Length: 113
Length: 111
Image 1 (cartoon, rainbow over the protein chains, first blue to last red):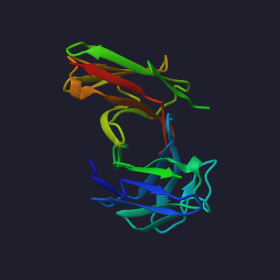
Image 2: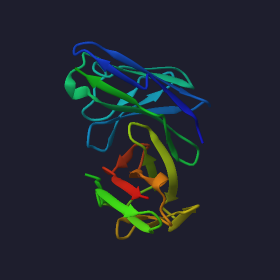
Image 3: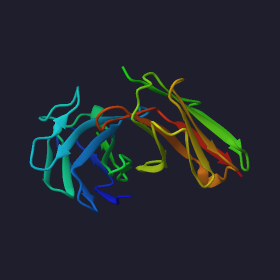
Image 4: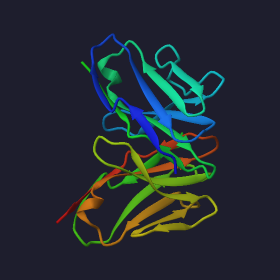
């Protein structure tokens, strides 16, 4: 299994500001995934972060709103830009092992006021 | 659309009871299915992974089954304990790496 550390674990932010979430994995991985869990909803994939190339975004998510960095094989960041109360969610980082088993970080609980 | 549904949405049982959580999916062409546990305000803990060629997987008091033809999976928890109280999520992988999640079953085991 992979050990994934996310920072911050929670934050309360003012609308219009941006928050950058960090994800660190204890082993090198080709792909890292960012999910969003809105209150009362299921998890939804935001984007796949590949080292050395642009992130791949799912339908409904755009780079201007959720810019992603992937500087090396163990680290990624997700920024939530120009936040509104609708962005209040839990954001989770995930990796997949060679058996395609997914592992998740502890999540970042974001509240936008 | 590839939808994943979990029933019931919430469940309360007394300690010691055996219980079954259900997951159904609309597209049977899955690659694998994974069950997770989520504690309040926390991330997801992987419980069991079932590949499309498998019928069941077991880990301790947990047993997960998969019936692709009917689009169903069940998670069986034996001899439930208060520490089992959490939300249980079912996630289906098709082609690619994205997981399609259900909304979860919130389980409360009372002493």
